[in-house]
Length: 291
Image (cartoon, rainbow, N blue to C red; front, side, top):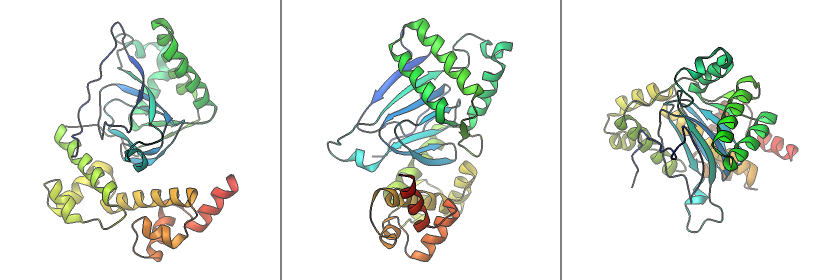
């Protein structure tokens, strides 16, 4: 059964103005969703795909992101976590806070100028790496053990580090905001369908019917929400899967082509170069040289 995406109202602990919590489950249950709170998310264990605005990429242990207010997102665990009795349960540590969690106008203070700029950038979703990620990860774990004042100081320290760091990349190519339950529910239906079907045929009329739109209306709807065509989105998921197989298996390239949902090698190579700016053979060679 496909779960409905929701406008998520996040609970706060008694006596707290923001939430700091560690979550562990067989897989991440919350699908494509959005909420008023800004979110700092540290992927502690597990791996899979993350969707932030119109961005799609792999996530793995150690990934760190700042997701802006009302920016739709979804961390989808890899298929292996949906099998009976998975060996590992995905886990994450999240910090949720509102713009006025620290008091009305707090982020408009002169001392908060750089952090205020960070908040604006986060509306596109930000991913941090390098020394910045290491320092913030340590602070997040310290916050989990800290008292209320320690958590408050930790949040400000994290935002300060993020605001001055150059070790980040913007995730979404456009600012997006959740609009309604109906809208996010449709997008979740699309994602669910593609993940189940991308290794085989994708039927445009079927997905249009599931979203209760005509084929032309569905194509316009999807392009308006993501700034990419539905075909490009499907190929992006397929190429991402192919990259995973190239890195983690000894399957030959033709086998990977078919396993990723492509019908012929020439189209697979063409799409791979379009998204990765190289060919599958060179991509695998580059990965092996880094090991």
